[in-house]
Image 1 (tube, one colour):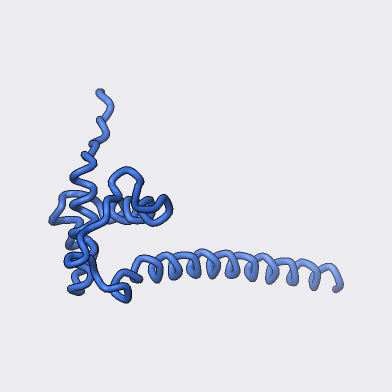
Image 2: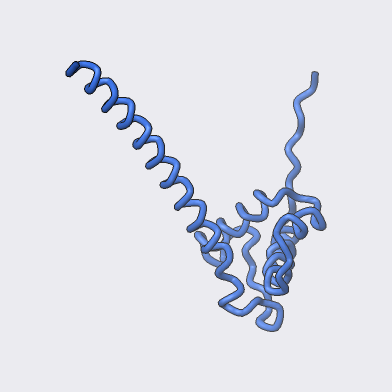
Length: 114
């Protein structure tokens, strides 16, 4: 059985995808819809956006869109808000796990006392 070959995207495609993403999100369209239209996964779009944000506008696929196409700053914050929600969900999961462990430990100590 042959291994599945990973699809690579050109710099130009990535740049255009990020411009489309920013423009579409400012119009209120969901990322899933944009990804489907571009033929990529939503996680790939988030990855490209994160890479663009962390490396600055000079990195691969991170060319800036003209000012008339770019979304207003308030509309572009959806990614940081999304990543903040993701971080809070991770933290919540960790806290729930710690609570579960402490509850079990309390039961064990209660049994040992009796």
